[in-house]
Length: 399
Image 1 (cartoon, rainbow, N blue to C red):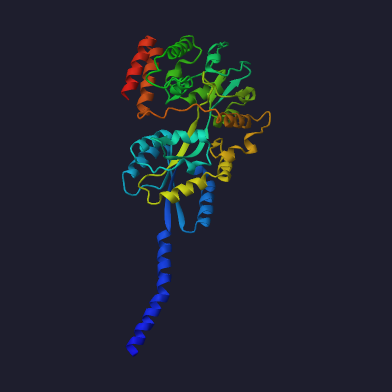
Image 2: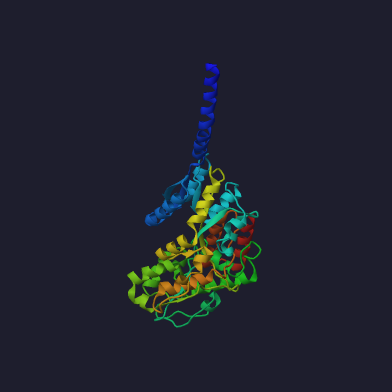
């Protein structure tokens, strides 16, 4: 009898304790750590840590481990981590490199409905084979600056700009022909964006204009080798009438060339015959081997909500990708003499008329190199333009 009583007591204890044990194990199973990588955003540590703290407070079972990676090491470290079984859960990358990973089937994908808080025009660049592989983070869209002491003309397109002259020892503008995809972006504004269009009549016409600008010293000879930072230096020294550049450089002009800043006016970005604007985008991706993709996506959407995006935009001259943030009054009003605010308004409006970027190129870096080689051959070596573009077309086709 005593033995039976002991068994009954033991069973009752197990019945009482088991639910608590199960619940404890369940809670432990739900405790997750999200590893979150950004690209060179360490100067915004207070902002990012505050977001992480707020998220962790409202998600008691989630911890965010933030690592800021130097921009120059982002691609290399991401690729190395994805080849392991323990990659970060959320990574800040460029669309070009993200696309490369998507083409290798290395990224987690999700439905378009998950991206409803973002501008529709921006999420399309983050799609491959009908699937969305990235979450927009922030955007920029260049504007056109001009020195009103050197010119009063207000061109809207590259065609209009090319018709203007340079005098008094100044240049019309500086196009960084061989820097990254600068030239490809200009061509894309004329729907010259494929092996079939690179040697079209319109393309030949444009390259003839580039050659004329170069030969007539309407652009600096260094345009063929130097970067946008060199172009900015020339604008600040009063050598350029017009400069298409990012709004983030306006404060640099104000600090380093106050006399030029005083005469600087802001226009919308120069367009081609499509009348559309190009832009740059930074995004987040979730590696396919992430152990917590759903939590990573949830945190990414929280990180890019209206409040967080608007705060970030007020700290640095970027454009939010969140629709509600971009609709804020901050992007609608400006003092007449505040160039940064004027630029912010102009560039934000440009996001409504975006030129679709080159997204179907698997070897973008190789294409940039091919483009640079041919423009250099035309401008420096006086290569026959039609023949050079025919070769360009064949090399592009091979990619």
